[in-house]
Image (cartoon, rainbow, N blue to C red):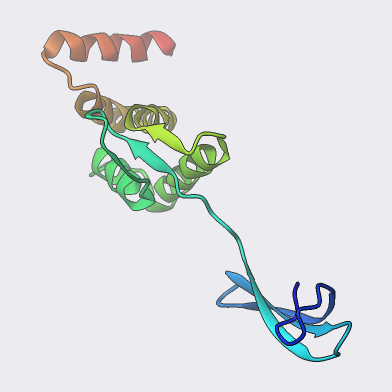
Length: 151
């Protein structure tokens, strides 16, 4: 870290402690040339995840939007909110861990359907019917038959 007083490149850390509820780390440093002390803050650098929608428009990924979709599918179902929050976090982590900074809305929908399939079959079918835009009762029955054949 470069000293703000003499621009020397070497300093030693005297004290480190969390700041802002653990979101940053505050470090007290001492320059090895002029011995003056200064404070730095270390922050995790995040690269935003961009969602490419079906109309090719782009927008930043919003975990809350994903969670709202999961909640809507699970309305009046015995799925605890905590479980849905965990599912949304797992999906977000999977997306962040991929090397791609752009992800399609279709991929996010597939992740959500996989999570719902494991949690509650009725919620899964609700989500799939909207997400896959079932046109008629036959498409709906095909999805139900797939679900039944997996059992």
